[in-house]
Image 1: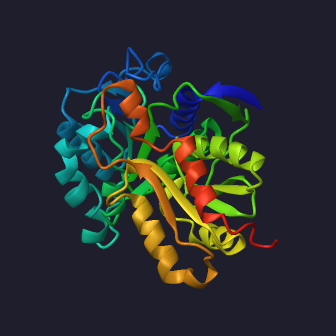
Image 2: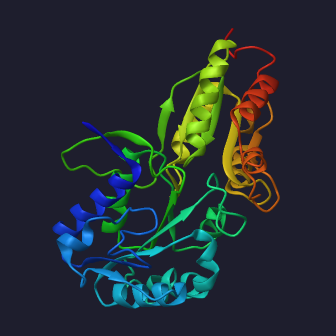
Length: 330
């Protein structure tokens, strides 16, 4: 095991899959010479050349359209949309073509695309380059949606996504690229739809994904000092969703906080909360609580930007509130 940065884990996964399968190629704005805005494709051009590491025009519509056509013809493109905020430029292709082609052809045509994109706040990039729009994709049948929180998860999940015969939207938080974590030197993959318990606990479950997992882990440390034992469940992929892992954790703790950076209104946390209420109501000792982004455009100024997102303090306060009756078993 060696420690590498999140962005290095992405580049490593891409390189390994390109060596394994010559049908895999990378395309997007500035992905070649510069290695992309976040350097997640750095070094690929030197090894694989311009035929398989392709700079594209500044047109998200063209990127999505060409990737869809290439996948329909047997290639396995990994197409980068520089910021998830720009996804609206190509949403017709994603909504009506990429995600529906297999269904419309009765399984005769697969569309094995990985649509890599970057979301999230923390860099003071303003309201049009800091959004978290994952819930939009989860509402589109035919798409898989992945949001890893660690370098280990990013590499293993990306390799699996590239091998999948369905379109996968792979969202990387821009605030994670320089975080470090241990990654095996030998090859490995992680199945989609398999959540991971990042911290075991018995009093309350925090369900999260992407960078919010790190916030949840920091909050769990503070809560431990206050006598509250927190379990942190990292979903890793939103579609498919690991409902078994949610069921097991909620049944154990009886209390749930759902944490994500996207706006609370209509966010993916609302879907999780609704499913818990529908299927696990009798297991709950307290109402499900959401700690999410504010329902406002992401501020550009640093302090308001931070305060508009989930924070350790907000999670600690929420846990203290729903655990005021004490631990479930004593």
